[in-house]
Image (cartoon, rainbow, N blue to C red; front, side):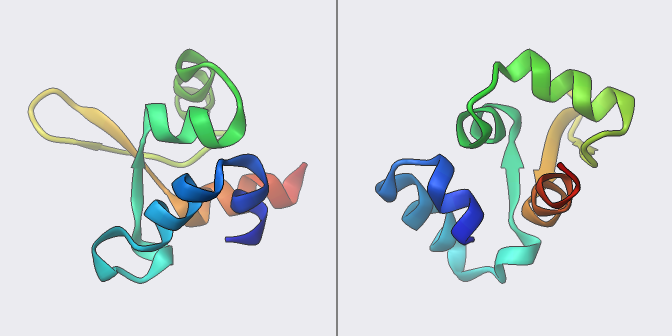
Length: 79
């Protein structure tokens, strides 16, 4: 979480770490949350998920995207 903490405000990093008592590897973030963490536009996150740069899952009838924190870490390690 240290890499993510550097990209967010302290209260946002704490909120993500405390999300429902889940193991941090199992936490799924919305596109807007990922964009805020990485300092990019939400459409950039959508492009990354469509092109396979960032792994995501489609959920619900609206097919909303959810990105696991582990996928964000993996992407950051490659850059």
